[in-house]
Image (cartoon, rainbow, N blue to C red; front, top):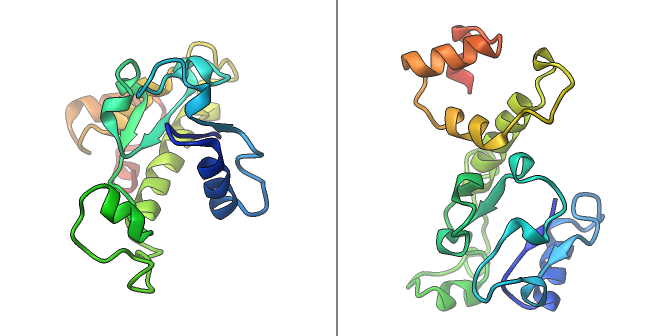
Length: 169
């Protein structure tokens, strides 16, 4: 996993310390403003990995002009007061409220479940060991189809999943 920001490297490193204090998930893999190849844009050209295997989690869609199919757009997480001011929100931040979102059903917990489900589908052993022909963008696209539609039933049956499992996805 990477932290990818159009902000300064110092900011990104501080975020990495907050999000991953044990340095387990990001392992100092930070892409910052100075690494970007286009001003005010983010691109996968600076990420090690094939586009077909990369999911992007971001709260700003316009910066991903070339990679919208890889993007899972989430709501902005306004923990710090400076974030609320920067983005014009007239509200108290979570840190000012001395609170945080619900650990069970807040935005971060919800998107974590989405990521886990897509990851599980992408790496499903029933599909064999050949990852070259898989495309996480297709998995994401089908994951976003409402449950119990004929198309989703077909896709999941192709993956070897029973319709009774669809309600949990």
